[in-house]
Length: 251
Image 1 (cartoon, rainbow, N blue to C red):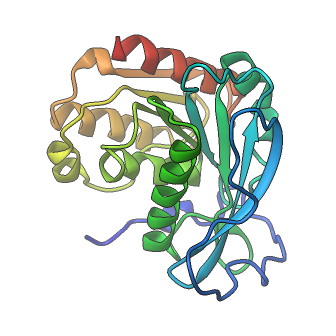
Image 2 (cartoon, helix red, strand yellow):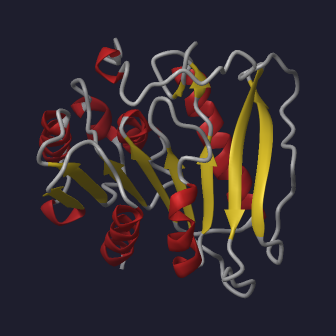
């Protein structure tokens, strides 16, 4: 399948001087850990993924209880962002008692993103991070969220990480090509929350995601798509809404 990523180029992209990112490496050991229950705070970690050094930030609120498995929330930033772009939502993680992970995108030359360069590496990277954190914190509930280019990538992960996620939140994006076949083969029709501004130039892609989910057999009650007044943006409240929608739908 030919990935349609041209639409993503320039979405929030700024020069980030990322020439040292995704350095060559060997092995696959995680650094900065293991992080376990009782260790609160932010931990900047790395892992070698298929010869590329990848970075992610893991935030563990003091509200995480050690007697029950905490939920896991992952946020993928847009082009031009990095692992700090999701820090604004830490209050939501505190409120929900959730372990919160923000991966850094793959170097695209002048900015960091999750495509078009390094799509297979990013897919493996995300899978490895989710599995590692769930091993450290035996989370039974994992929510993937993303904004802009990170949300496009998250849309594909509805199928790619279908066996690892309890829900997905798509903010300011959707899907940019025909992905119905992959979605149809996804065994779990997980809850998908979509938020996009009524002035966002990408709103057609959000509509396309809704249409493709429906064509792939998603029950209407598993799709929560809403528009808000505004342009290309996201907010922590959207993450909270996606979490509660996924929780409610899984009961």
